[in-house]
Image (cartoon, rainbow, N blue to C red; front, side, top):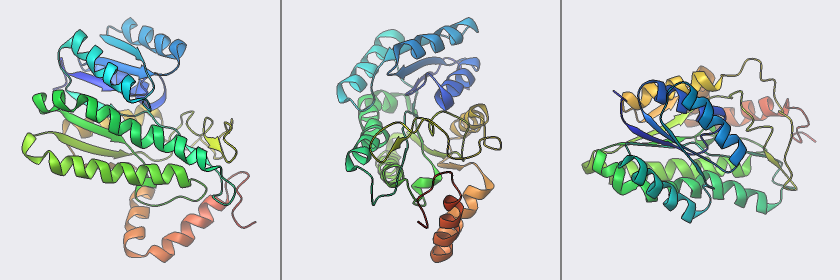
Length: 270
């Protein structure tokens, strides 16, 4: 069903984005990937082409409005349409709000929220023409605030609100909107997280051995897009937290606090 569809994946040169490029591409889609790092982007483009996937790689920063407009125009020039936009590019942060530099929160919002706004705005006329899909890669942090991730959780809450508005406004246009919420996933997003003063964390604060792989996440998102689902919360623990936070919020506060307090170098309880 995805044969000859044109799929844009922001942040598509690594992690979940790269895995999405492979699964959509292997099912016949024509792929557009974006990323800020030219070397990583070109390497991923070569890997995709080696297995016969048609791919256009565009060096772009999602937090830049003009880059998103250029992304849409280059896609139309190359492929003539846009069927699916996957807003995958994102960044995380870690730091207690007592000490975090507010510029860190702004940087996270610029990428995780405004990046989605800019990309969606640039692609929307073409998605309406195709009655296509808009996918946002979110997190449980969009349902439940996570300690030491004030900027990240805020960006995901804002993302959920924006996507719900878009879904409602486009009811008569036939555009599908999916909010996908993976659990903790083995990618570099935690190692590249911004910490309180604004530097890169450089290490994962959690044991990644039992986390989902990027390929597992991409498989679920692919099938959720095919089925035109509204939400995809991907883990049992994630579903439990969403449910607890709705019906027993005080208990959720304590459980989340105790869980994140165990992280390496956590400031909680100090």
